[in-house]
Image (tube, rainbow, N blue to C red; front, side, top):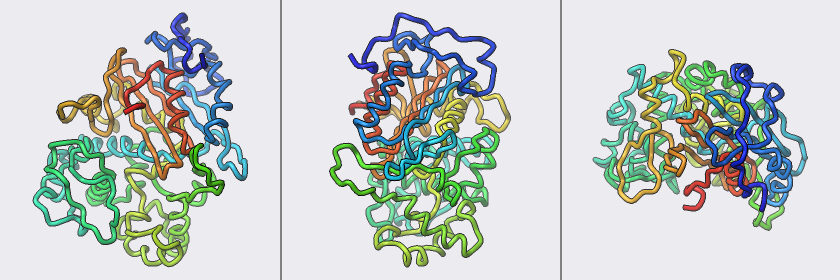
Length: 421
């Protein structure tokens, strides 16, 4: 049997009470050698045998880098980055290496929205058009029914992304609140609503309300030359025979937008939708045709553009699995709502909370989200609120989903339906 598949139930991990209260320091925690997949008293740090075999798995799957972090008892206790930023340059990853989180961006943004709801800034059940009606929205009565709650539980009826956003209006396919339709477009619209309510760019609000207070110093939805230097490149899946480095999507787009930001002396982190509209023709003039099609292509994107270290993302996961301790955090009632089914759709094997997917397992409920950008970044985050634990795995390869599933199984013992359906 592989280290991933081997049963790991005989031994209970020993936790040192004194160390449990210390800040994150990988060297401060004992090397825990026996995780117990079927023992909920055991922790989720991947076992040593699996970690020793991980470079072989990465090579076999053509995944140049992986970053992992673990939360236990509501605290970040372990992290590990392996591999290289770029398979061509072979520059190694470091502790401050940034991974492109892709759709793991969504739950983090959901937390921000719920902070604003707790503060009375936004009503989750008010129509979004009350706050901001974008000119690309269709003139359809269903548009007027979409709420922030619909957005966060993916019941807007909107598509994931329009095929031709420069010429196509945005309209629900079904009446909001009647079924699940995963939608990045809906998240982006809600982002623009938040922009209106706060008077800030997405990243400005994030830094003020979440990243700063949570100590997520290596997190951003946007781009700069400094962030670019620390960010991984994405790579093709193992079965892709094209040897060339694939298009880098956000990196390619934002490198072009950065030249405009430099000329304006206005960092991309402060750009709002109006700035992206103004910059669009100039960015299109210096990029290949079809790369940049509408203002949303050059603006920070709450649905997809978050960059973090694995440790920073684990700091966010820690907020999800412990009772709120600080006034800036969402309330306990709101945290519970995030992790509670928000819409009853018969026949589903997974449910939608607010920003999270929910799955029942033989060992109790878990929450999770996956992420994929351009088929070259594949990520996963899993949490157990009852056990106050979480696991994050971020990769820069198109076959990273195969790798992170092995990480999850080896570390937690969970074999989720989400991995197969």
